[in-house]
Image (tube, rainbow, N blue to C red):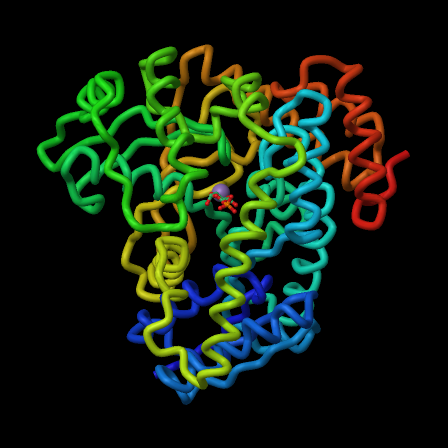
Length: 439
Ligand code: G6P
Ligand code: MN
């Protein structure tokens, strides 16, 4: 049986154990000959690599493990690339979140000015990865989790239309799992209809096996304050619960569809700002909790010489990306949400907008399901957000200050062009070592 060379870009990330464990669980279809952890932070990936080395020794000793900072080493001969890079690391994520808050604007990893700053750091890094995939492994499949996903997908599809790629996000599946559990169904027994942009969309229908639409039932459930059934995952902690609870408020105001949790930043900007401490945001909490716990655990296992029964390996995140690889390898259709060029899927949006819709993944890649017409409200929000996304890509590729300013001014979280300009100048000063020069 063929064995594969799989590389994880951002191999030092805290999600790596869950992803590797999911890969090992899928060895019936995705057996590895070589696993490469690629990261530009040599120290971090060395610690993570120490843990992964133990895991492989115990579960798959036949796999060669390579830990590297060099893309040529990582990509030559590769069949799969799982990309989960975070350009600038959590240190820059903290600034992405804190700088906007100082201006009274939403401070978030992927939404608003924080997501914009992250995009300007990530686009050059993603394109450098793409150039080297084209050079060293042009037939490889690239499965991408890196954020901000829609913006990176836009830049990627324009530059590398010939590469085989899937841009995915685990938020829709996490929400779908929450909906299924809350309504007392298995996720696999429900069919979902979702449309939007990444971190910016809505479920229009939730069908059960009898073909009934469960959206009215879900609406009643949310509006009558009955409890949500959260499950064991990274998203069940004190930081995420208010986000899921706020689905009730979105539903009360806009009851026709179920909103993606990330719409809270666009619908309820003032409330989201009021809840944050500009000196200590989600990034700081991630550094002090997940980051610390994961690397402490890596070091504990390395000292003990065993990864057996470590808590590090669980999670939807890992299983979900591997489900896509499984569908590619087996040609068994897998229904999922994907970020793809629109090309008529959603009426009223540009052909090159990256939309997030359901589709079917097989050996040939993704076949996305058409959506057709949307109500004014959702379509107009998407048109505006897409224009922000495309201008962000153009600003990065052209090195254009004025496009950057237009992008930020268009983002719904930013109240005026004056605030946009102050934000842009502050973000620029903080990101000098990462952003393309803007003129
Ligand atoms: C969800 C989103 C990801 C995002 C993550 C942040 O999983 O889909 O795109 O990066 O949340 O979670 P965190 O725990 O780091 O705040
Ligand atoms: Mn996401």
